[in-house]
Image (cartoon, rainbow, N blue to C red; front, top):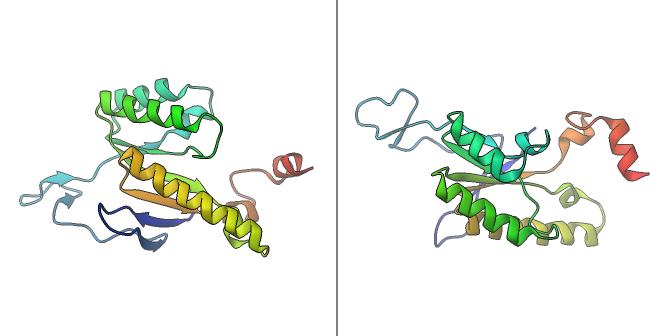
Length: 165
């Protein structure tokens, strides 16, 4: 699943890194933790890996930390009912267990829809993801445009038709 990675720099405008590209390593990033490099690469996972298997949000975040992950990406729609309470729970839990939130992940298939009203809704939705990322202290917003749907990956076409029909 590809996407557009947007960095959330403090005090500045979001910066698009590019589809399937990672920003250049900084002087504090090193796979080997070589001398002169203060921090090794961090291993993280997305919270939805737990939730799609019936594990609650808080239990999944705690388990992520317990099995050795250094950080987490959050997949939560900021427009869902109850999203603010869920995001506050996410933020507080991650803070309590010292599990940094690196990215928020959002699917906005409608940004490439031919209808202007659909594109406008998804643009507002994408901006809500940026706000959510800042609220959670995330460094990135991974914008997923949905090519996995058209390529028949992740969600089986039969299930997609069930949702739409």
